[in-house]
Image (tube, rainbow, N blue to C red; front, side, top):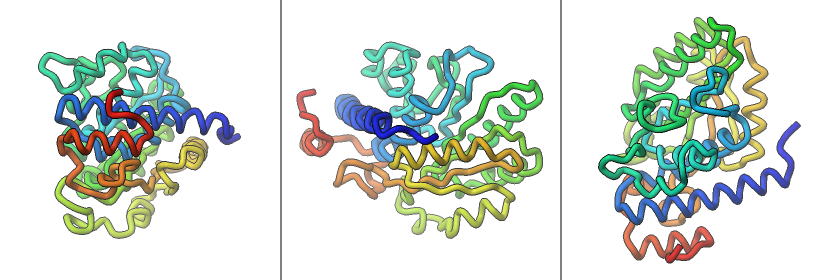
Length: 277
């Protein structure tokens, strides 16, 4: 059964709240990555607040999440705080010296983070290892790996894709935040991916696609992915970099640009908030 309309509304409201809090924090500290965090908002939030079983960081039976596109860490932290892994007040220390909330996730310091990430192209390999470990131990957890489309230009991703098809753990779900834009330009300008679904199918993966900002559609895709055991599954989510803020949408300049006072005020207005939140 899919999500109820009421639950979709609740998660949508939470996503909007996370977007406002993200912009407020990044404006205050004048550093961080708004674009890729905004494109992944519904994906990460739906996983943590609805689909994943994460009762505690040390639970051996918990589902695992690998944020391979580690620069979207602020959205991960917002969700971890919402789940109670650490006080929400600590979000204000993002990227500050001595904080456990750095610009990329650190499994050694941040409660709830399963894998340290940052260097792109590594997450799928790590996720595969975690999935195979679960299979060997006869654990029932699922490993979710969130990939950026730009990092799929890295050869290591496709080595992991080949290995996943060979060893097929049955509990690995890759998700691509397919926003079409990376640090220095569009994917097509930097290194075209062409037909991404066809690529994965040629590596013997099952491919599902959805609108990555449609919570109900993404939830349904996750449910479908969990029923497929004969091959690894990837959900290609069509998203918009900087989603929700008109002047950020689809712009590579907002991969990691500081937010000015003027831009902050406009962004908060578009998100239904106020600049003095």
